[in-house]
Length: 239
Image (cartoon, rainbow, N blue to C red; front, side, top):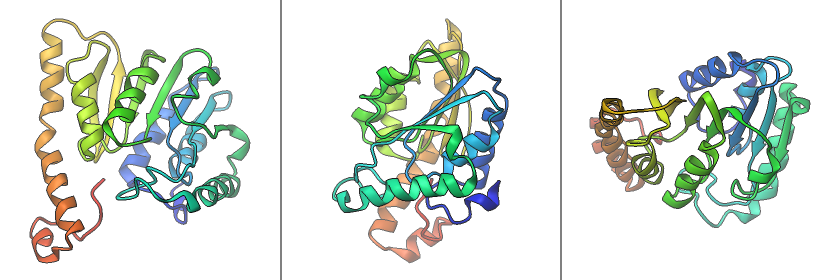
């Protein structure tokens, strides 16, 4: 599986791909996966390769040239169509194109295109606070009881982390399971009483790692190589 990702551009570590694989492989025929934010297909290939036959896989990405990746929030309209074409070509090359229903729409527009519960929701869409919070709340409501919510760039992106703090830190629906780098995993089951405080504390314990990532991003942006190397970074954008 990892060989099929070697030439697919994107931001996902081997351990993160492994977590996606494990959760997708646990599903059963009739279950549904929804991915928000596909870029050029790395995560979609993992999900489609791992999911058993009979699992529906829906990917959602407008390929609109905004929120493409680190420091690529606006101004990439010219690359949008290329992103879409490369995405489809990568799926075809990996042999998973026929397993995926792709919606080239914004996630807020696609809610009505997916009917029923979602057993595995993977969010790696717009990283600004408003869109990230909307995805977590609106699509999170679609996750089936006992289902899994995975969020990329958690405790790394300022917008995504702010959305987590506003929704999941003290929420009543999702237990924090853990993370692989910036890929955070939640399980949908009721969070009651003292569990809410413990659940919030486990997430808050990740904030020092978040603070380090923010500092590294500033140093990398300013090209202060000697300083970020002192913090153990090789200049790779933290995710």
